[in-house]
Image 1 (cartoon, each protein chain N blue to C red):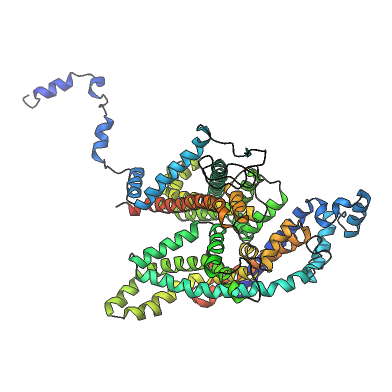
Image 2 (cartoon, rainbow over the protein chains, first blue to last red):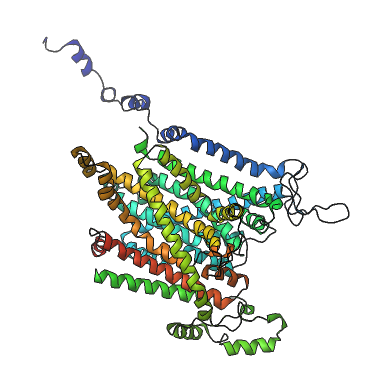
Amino acid sequence: MSKFSNADRKLKNLSEKELFSFAAQNPDDAERIGYTDYSYWRSTFRTFMHRKVAVALLIVMLLLLLFTFIQPLLPGQASPNEIFFQEGGIALSNQGPSAEHWFGTNNAGQDLWSRLWAGTRTSLLIGFSVAIVQAIIGIAIGVLWGYVRKLDFFFTELYNIFDNVPSTIVLILLSYIMKRGVITMIFAMSITNWLGMALFIRNQILMIRDRDYNLASRCLGTPVHRIIFKNLLPYLVSVIMLRMALAIPGAIGSEVFVSYIGLGLPIEIPSLGNLVNVGRTLMMSPSLRYQLIFPTLIVSIITISFYVIGNSFSDSADPKNHV
Amino acid sequence: MAKYLIKRVARSFLTLFIVITIVFSLLRLMPAEGYFNNYDKMTPGKIERELELLGLNDPLPTQLARFYGKLLQGDLGVSNRYRVGVPITEILRTKFPLSVAFGVASMIISLLFGIPLGAWMARRKNKWPDHLGTIFIVFIEAVPSAVYYLFIQMYGTDIFGISMLFSRDNPRTWILPVISLSLGDIAYYAMWLRRYMVDEMNKDYVRLAVAKGVGSRDLMMKHVFRNAFVPLVQYIPSSLLLTLVGSIYVESLYSIPGMGGLLVSAIQAQDNSLVQALVIIYASISILGMILGDILMTLVDPRISFAKKEGAR
């Protein structure tokens, strides 16, 4: 009987419940084995911070953005459409930069400083709206196009037809026909520029939708929306961000162009486009050139910043560049 | 190849048909004053009679069919406000040669500068020529052309001591518009050529050639450059054709009496028929440019066969 040790005897006396109880699980312990210090966004951020020019421009851009929004709240700011008068009731027109009017006044006697910031707000509003609309429509159509096989033929033919239409012409035509305004401008620019985004997303999705990890995911019964949002789209973050960043300078450029051909926003809504355009008409007289130089300076700072930041961010968001 | 071409051309005609129909229908929505040059003085009865005479009161499909009928005979209609009563084809005939001259000049300049710049940047990658070139490209690509054109005009005319406006007889007034037209394309060619050459230089066959001791100049010209230039070829026809019909912006800045400036004048004069004709011309030209670009690609690079690509999709 010596075969039965003390421990065996003890086990025999235990009830079923005591024998088979759940072991306590500690999630922290589970993490400890496979833990690495890698975080995608932190790495992206760290890589981005190494690019000195892009970081500097990002800071400039953030300050500029901040300032455009707090400028109307500052004390002593003129309203962009307020007309200033000299003694004797004549409009204070075309005065060069002074202590009273930092950037001078325009032909109608309005304060260029406040018009410039109001214009920057309008143009950035147009730029951001166009970028967001492009992203929403482009991603939605691109995902449908790439993921739903039956729709591929339809969308591809549609794309082949509409991609041939020059976007400048669409922009001109729509601005010619529709009522001038910010909405028209956003609509006319958005109607064509999602095409490129949609095509790109479609091509990428076609490439990655049947990779093994997605196949496995589908076999495990992952719902389609989860595959799209968790497996496919995170792959494309860098490109989506790049396209959005480039859409903003593009939209500002189009706005300047449309204003030039006389289809821009009405003059009561200051925008960088119509400020540049007013400045252009005064270019012939050197003493009034400040009215062209200030708006073009702002346009250049904004567009170059978005271009450089967008490209640097998209490089940093690519995990291949993280090591 | 032939099958692909037929399909490609047929699709372009479909695009063109859709575009013309949409443009035509949309412009019917415009107020009727765009068809008369003295609208304000006309009585409602007279306006009605004139509209009837122009066929503008007919239902849209009838008007459209009539428009296509005329279009096939090469008749684009008559200008109503810009130059009253003059056929649009007549207006275009005097404007076209000038735009062609500017287009060809700027294409030659941009190829002549853009390609050496791109090749130079690729060969001196990450050295100062590359950095300098990158600054130039970022500037041209990012800043709206509408803005730097103005600065070229403003300071260029000061430097050269010439008038701001173009005059046909003074050859020096050609300089600034041609420079303005070329800058965008120079940056474009340089940027892409650099990128394609750098990609090509990282390929195994180039490494092997280097290891075998092929001279760097020979290697660059005979292998890297030739392969890298192929994708750029596709862009050339579009770029040429679009400058042929004139840069809208540059031409009107310098008051060059070409096709591009005409669109701006037509819009400002609210001449509906002229706007319609020009929009259709621009659309057709850019569609044609894309077809030619695709064809040129297959000619330059024997590896590309669109027939095959079509099947793989």
